[in-house]
Image: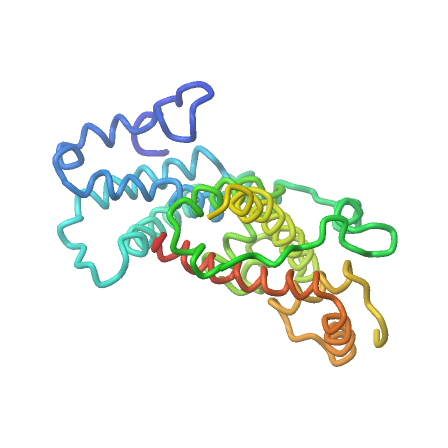
Length: 223
Length: 62
């Protein structure tokens, strides 16, 4: 049994808009000056939860519970780690808890995408018959300064979300959470070589998205 | 797999190198390709950038 009633989401809206009324009811949430700051980490937290749980509603539930816990205990946050790191550690416990609860329901953990890893047609879209880049990677200007720009992350996040099916989750685990490939293979129930294919594809897709939507776009408006 | 690799194969090896040690033949073929191919050197730099961006994203310093 999951705790509490499920509040249905608003149709067509972003992930969580209709689901936060219970959270909003928390008096502390309304008055704590860190409410907005904590709330701003919700998209990241949802990505984290999705990478671990694969199940949208379950992931939202985990985030919801973590945010409520965070607001209840924000007084104990001492600023030694970043706020995101602290929120993620709370969320990790919620995720583990939900995984345990869902373990009886194996469906959540069945490999959702029966990807055909021998099918390399996606590579044919990126490379011509002689193996050359169809859209050669450009030299990106000033990548270090890019990371300092707030607007860059408004491009980075949608690019991350647009990665092909298992790619977003596996890339998130590998590069953002820094999990080892071996651990990921076990969780995803795939072979190492399939994991490498997924990551290869994800990296190519991400670099292409960033190049098009950030680096070229920025150059054309002249920084 | 000593000898030449094309960009498609080089991109695969560059990504694989983030996950595992390349075997001698692979490494040599990749290095040889990179010496001659600016586009793949750009891709190599981009992979490093993705890695740094991901670290930054995790800490929330963005």
